[in-house]
Length: 202
Image 1: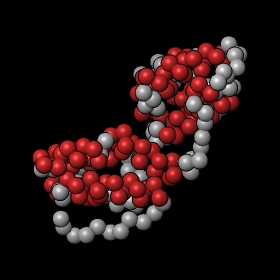
Image 2: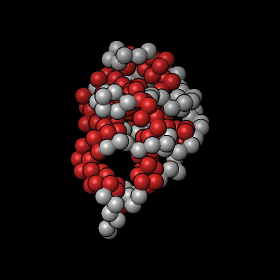
Image 3: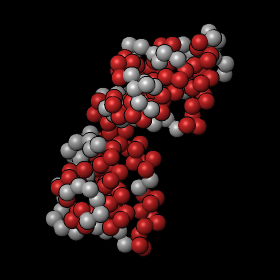
Image 4: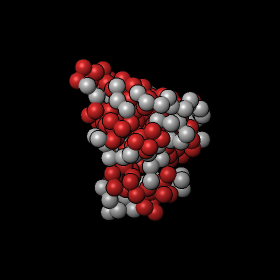
């Protein structure tokens, strides 16, 4: 499979991300040159993605896995799909990003347990960090554009200087942080509870 790769060194979650990338490529039985034929990047870029020297962009992680899938022999595809589920890769990547940003210990209650506006602000900040703290314009695009979530408002929310103006802006922020649509109703309820001044019922 070519020249051996350099050992992975570095923080735990960043190293785990690199080991996973290497494991996917090993399972696919492909070289970096093989991946180039099916991907959008160079062999050097794919090698850096699995080097562990930094945290790659999320799109590069997913592209790496896709290139392995496309280049792999048919007999390994079923196992490869299990080992490289997008949600699992996203979790690994998000943990590595939070480790890099020093926010791994950031915690917040689930939406149904949010008791006040301060906890709501912390929960929104945590969601942004768990999404990998993507560029604000990327969040805005996923949120539906500037009409739904202005960059100035978005910046103030992620810096815990403000809250969304209303429930629609809250929803836009949540979608921008890649929250699944089935999770939105519990946030709707939390927002309604806070606006109405009601306490949390457990």
